[in-house]
Image 1 (tube, helix red, strand yellow):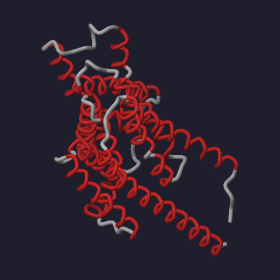
Image 2 (image 1 turned 180 degrees about the horizontal axis):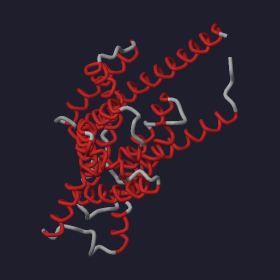
Image 3 (image 1 turned 45 degrees about the vertical axis):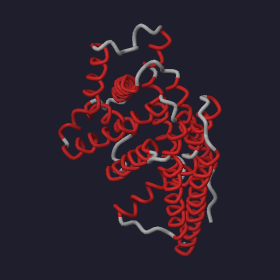
Image 4 (image 1 turned 90 degrees about the horizontal axis):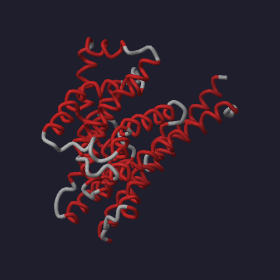
Length: 314
């Protein structure tokens, strides 16, 4: 049984650090978007797309890959996938921004807690994947939590559900696309197809006198420009982590962001969480713990079987 080399251990540590930093930045997004008031969610979306596109184009240019953007328009399947992915991520970004800027950060956090459960459910319904018993328990517990929270809210938690389903569907599209694209190419493709909408939004807001990019001081303008950085940097960190650490580690790290979002909403932005709602969140966390423990156990079992097979072959 071979032990990991010092180089492999170093790569694992770096990958874990990259992944943690990515989710740390995503977890801090509510505080960043709250600082963008009085900009509307539509203005934030427009600037986020355009400045992200500028950053990605610069990175592709440095890598000598700008031609890839033109090649994308010649590949109908790729263009369709990028358009669909762009529509999904635009929906996700807009709803998330609306939630944060209207005082519903905790609902947004719930959406990202539910996302792994929705992803698993989609795997069963759309990809005909088989679940282990523990995974069925996790999905069932998540369903109970969803029903409980719906009753508690008095209406469907549409913010949470929209975020969970839009991001899970986005992930499904990216899975179908495979690993043929780098993180920069993927974000570039998505922002390119969103660019006409973003340009239209920015122009419309300027014509109707609703834009805040100018007239609110240099600090506000800088914050809007930096929406491109806060979009691109975590994605690139995540891509760097995904190449270095096991999927199970990524799965465990992903809970960092919604935990920080929830804490930021309650402790910093002053949102109120009734005790009854904590019960619903608790049920979701139980489901996620079951899912996480099952993933760790399954991954360990797979590694042991692989090592045993390798030893037998030797």
